[in-house]
Every structure is written in structure tokens, then in C-alpha cells.
Amino acid sequence: MDEQRNTPDEPLFNDDQDEAIPAVDPRSGATPGVGRIVLAATPIGNVGDASSRLIELLATSDIVAAEDTRRLHRLVTALGVEVSGRVISYHEHNEAAKTGELLDHVRAGKTILMVSDAGMPAVSDPGFRLVEGAVAAGLTVTAVPGPSAVLTALALSGLPTDRFCFEGFLPRKSGERNSRLADLADERRTMVFFEAPHRLEVMLRALHERFGAERRVAVCRELTKTYEEVIRGTLRELLEWAENNEVRGEIAVVVGGAPEQEPGKPEDHVAAVNDLVSQGIRLKEAVAAVAEDARVSKRELYSAVLAAR
Image (tube, rainbow, N blue to C red; front, side):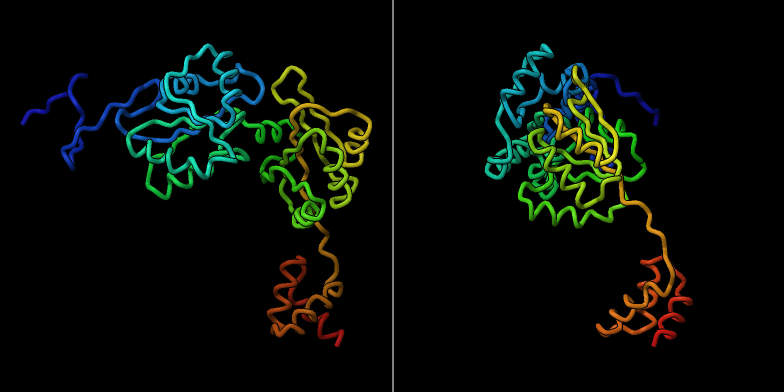
């Protein structure tokens, strides 16, 4: 039987099920009649960073779920885009109530565009509940990548970028904040935080007290905007800067990871082994655990424990 090529007007077929596969719009990536959620990154400061895919989706999506509809209006006005779909407000105070409704629209074949005020939705912004619900329901979720305050700050910080973690905003209450920082005191990876300008001095003082005066840090302010500024130095230097300046704008703080600790001598860790033994752990297992954590020889540590008895 001769092979026949499909013409542009002929549907493509799935060989296994003999069902027509809807064509994909090459501009927006949409498949007609198939519902989906699209997380789209929006500019973090410079409207020129908006992608062509974001612009296309703003114009064509059935529903645009926005963290702040006023910010969305300013964005589309600046881009010269007319939103043809329904715009709804979707933020931390109503996402629990509205997620089910949005998922129903996806089931009905609608394309929902999710945008936050800046950057990628679901990353320290609304959107996670929607993704979580869609994944649980087996619905399609995709993303339009773009500007990211986290990665921009990390790249500009001058600190190691091979391993990092994002910690968002620290708790406002001092007790909770100190507890979080205690957990991070030995974190070896570079850490990225967000902070409000009026709380930056308090944050830097807390970091100074917990991590030490000489830990390297970068304060990234107004990224991609006209008055972008990156101040780099030690926590002692940056705390002094914050104390003597009125800080404004959106802030990302990048903190270097904890320095490598010197392994020390095996006898320095005898007490730690004995503490584990007193808890019922066998001597060899206690020695192995402490030696791995302290980066000392198991044999030498075992000998030191016996010699101290």
C-alpha cells in the first residue's frame, strides 16, 4: 500500500487509537479543546523583559488569573496588549476558595494563564495550590519561563552559584526568625532571601548575630529597574550600610554558605562518641557516625575513645 502524506487540511492520527490529534498553535503553544494551566513569568522591573509567548498568552487565554488585577492592567497597557479572556483575582487570601473553580474550567477545556506581580508564579507567589490541585487531578500544567528575581540576584551577587537554596522571606517574629536562622547556620549552599526595605536592617542584624560578622553577603535592590543597585561585602559592612541609609525598593539578599570546618583532632570528638554510647548506641556505630560528621579517621577516633577510658 502506497504511503500518503497528510496535507495541511488533513488531521493527524494516533496510530494506536485512530483518534485525531488537535493541531498546536505555533504562537501560543495551545492545543484547541484541551484545557491546561500556564504559569507565566512576568517582568520583575523592566517591561522590556516580557517574552513574546507571555504577550501572546495574555491576548489569547480564556482566563487570566492574576495576583493583582491592577498590576496586570498596568502591564498589559505598557505592552499594548488587549486581554480577550476573563480576568480574575487569584491571591493568597482567596486561592483556597478559587482553586476548585479554576480546575473545573481546565476540565472544560479552557486555557488558564496564571501570572503573579513579578517573576514566576508559585515561587514565593500564588500558584502553588493551583499546580498542586492540577497535578492531583491529572490536568496539564506548563510554564512560560522568564524573569526571576532569585536567579538574577544570585547571578549578580558574586557569591558561589554552583549550589544554592531559596529561603523566601524570613519570619517577622524574632523567635521564629532566630529558629529559622539556627537551622541555616551550617548551610553550605549560597542562600537567597527576599526582604521588605523597612525590615532589611533588622534582618541583617539577625544574620550578623547568627552567621558572624565576616560572612559574605550581597543586597540586590530594584533589579532590572532604573536604580538597580547591588551592594556586596561582609555582614558587618552591609549592616553598617543599612543603618546609615534609607533603603527603598524591592530587595533580594544573597548570603554565602557556611565555610568548611577544619576536621580537628580525633580526641576532640571523644565526648560526642560517649554521648551517643550513653543513649544506647553501640560503640562502633557511634564512632562511625561521629567520624563521618567530623571528617576524622574512624580508626584513630576509636583508639582515642579507648585511650580516654
